[in-house]
Image (spheres, rainbow, N blue to C red):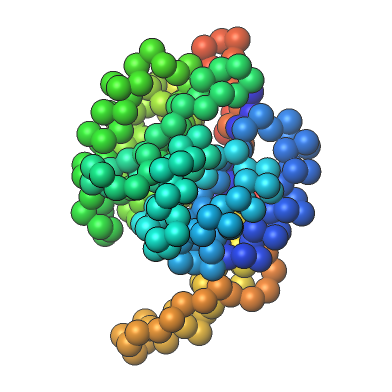
Length: 258
């Protein structure tokens, strides 16, 4: 079984780029399931229902989110109505729109997908360790394999969460920082891990954002409206290959960019 995790989609042009390349990548690498972080897909600030549907049409099976989940109120009902297509960080307060996990079918197997947000240098949400643990306990016996998107700022927090759940969640990857890391590995107890899978968006800006606006804010400390950068688009992500006939043992984790 091959599962592709696509890095944070930044902007409408990145969605258009996915239309061109994702189905080809699915065929080339014999991908069975695609998960993509889409919290910046509607030109940085959240995700609209229309753009969410377009992302799915590009070949994405499930979207994860992050700190921009609730930027667009139009998404709230969509989050409630489509738990098999989109999940948001599980550690948002109880009663928030949407769901933090979902069990989906892949080749007849049950895949538990979980999304959690870090709290270091970010909004102080509920404890990410406890929140993920609660999901695993609640879904015990209801899934065959699992993946976790850790949407977090601090490398140490991502790695700590991964180490904590090593051997219990098959695939663990980070999003949010938009820079693909070169530390992909199989941990001691068998989980595949990478700190950040990177970004799908314009490579000539700063993390997909127009450079001038970012530099202006950093130099002057004055409000500056961010917009998506111009120029070349690139898709980054990782492929997880698992042996479904050997308790979903990880064959390999491989970075890709297109």
